[in-house]
Image (cartoon, rainbow, N blue to C red; front, side, top):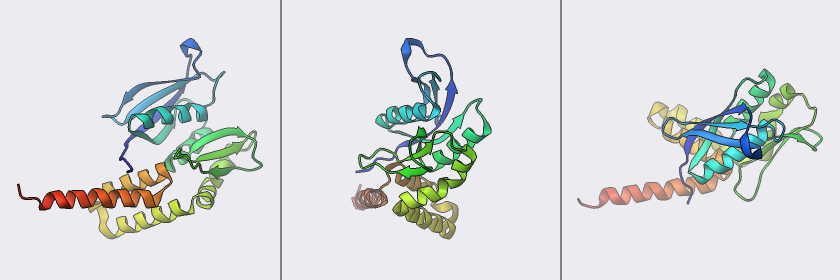
Length: 195
């Protein structure tokens, strides 16, 4: 069964790390919806830092909804912001010929591969198309959710945003819909039981 993760905004900072770690997750505040990862630029890049933070946070029932790069250039900041909206990891310096999204069968988030030396502005512009090509089921589910939101307004907005996040995180729209249907059926059954 798919669980509903707590969404966080992850701030990524360069900084010195003790003990030779590539990245260090700190200031995790699920109630505030924030966390910070600090990485050593000699051992990792921001993409690796976000990947490590996501991995650790998922074990604790949290998902990275948004990535905010602290004190970094506008091109890389825009790329990470757009990729985080799609719940994608970024792999900078990849050996692919052009930017593309890859999915994983192990339940890990999909990744956007950006070749070494590629323009980050161009990579950002190609992101939506690469995502749609690699994850058509996810994109169709997101379009359905947007349609539901237009039809029902704010009444279901939060629930639908949560559903969209779960679909992006898992890459499995059918599994998310099935889990939500089972959860709603349980709530309905409990509501019918006399007190």
